[in-house]
Image (tube, rainbow, N blue to C red; front, side, top):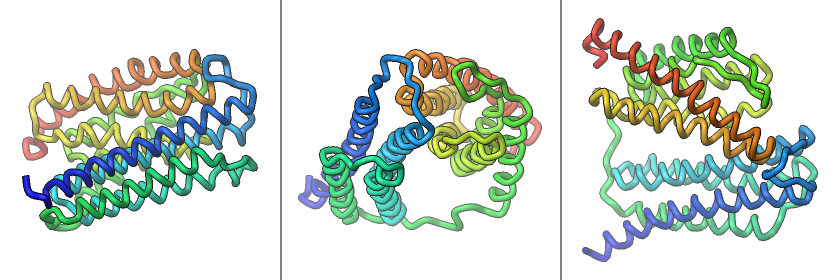
Length: 302
């Protein structure tokens, strides 16, 4: 292996490690905030609105930074150097924002966690620079075609309406719905860009309408839920089903990792089972069936 390839490989690893360090720092900070407030996530947690928002933002920004760092390493590995660099930059920016969040809500910034975050950002920056020497692949065409933009607008509206109109409040907070069917259908028929954006736009619009304070968590949760299955557009039914399960799992797990700090372990686990098997499970089965019927009726969508 040439020296250049070794540097590039180290760049990928440093970027991934930096993202993992950032999310670890954010999780430990959330645990510490709970501790100083007199709580542990192994018990029922009863926090003020500001404390819930602080911890939710802390965990969300850490998860989002790590996700974007992983995406950066993957994109650069595939040769999309510029896009990967942008992903790495946004990952670092969100991580640095996480250092400022405690001040906004009147809490102290804890040096050890801030140092971990800064170190993670530095590792991502070094990794991006090392990986940038890999052969670049140019993107072809616009990010979204006019058809994809129109489909996103329509399906996002349908998704939001389904969430608002057919939702069941949960005793542990939040609500259950089957609107995720639209996300899976969008992803399987139109690909990862449409699936991911429908998941983001539709869920956030519905959250704003119903007044869900932690709407930002939906960006990551439902964005991944649509993006992952969308990567299998045109593949076999089995591959698509597995991808939908992974997408549903990531959606439910994202909410769980936030809920465990603001609700406590037991209520968060109940919500997790509800999201995974009630919401995502039913939506996956219906979504696969609907996509199959539409694909047969309109073969060019296959």
